[in-house]
Image 1 (cartoon, rainbow, N blue to C red):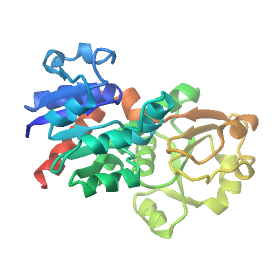
Image 2 (cartoon, rainbow, N blue to C red):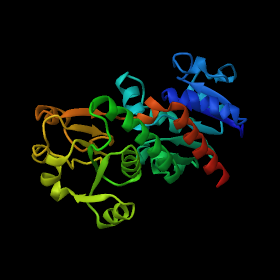
Image 3 (cartoon, helix red, strand yellow):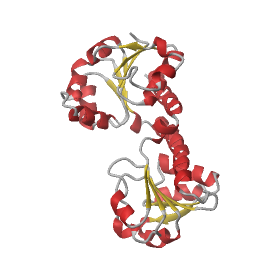
Length: 292
């Protein structure tokens, strides 16, 4: 069915995604995403959502399949519960010409699917999604920081590590609410981009000098750029926010032992703006569909 989308796994974002797609004229089937999700029954299109009894039924009836974000975590959870390798199940039931969307798809699994003639879109490799999702992440980040930093963000000294999609949007939003923002980068190209957008620039080699003058550190880099040796230069009470995916930029326990306030903030769009995140996923689907 060309206009049928099968949604499985996921969180509240995927409930809103089902609702959004139905409002756009798609038929939606779900598996492992029914009444057990607290958001679903509250949605205006909930009664139109069809429930598949198995993944094989979902794959058989739908041209588009939408999995969780992050998909690698979903696979790990399924494995921990003693289920068979869901990657094998997915490959066994998909067919040539289908389109599979998810975030953080293991490279080997994506390759297996493509060999079967399945079109694969990883949200985390799609520029449109990353930019839009970065904006939602930035808004959620402000909400988290406001709750932890009791002095108000205006005039706070904020250091953002990384200037990719999330880092750029977080820096812009933090500046927009009055923070004094410095962007810390590794590459000259990133430094030039941040400079062109009016941000103060720092390099990781300068963290020993930057951290003592910083109130809030927001890491967006998924590699350990803030080891204990560098964090020792931060003042006690500094708010340290982890936005990046595993392994992240620092060790939370080490940071806490140094007297820092640690905020682990994965999946901020799903927490603060699930309907907005769903719209971005739906737009990404339609962009890819129109580009075929």
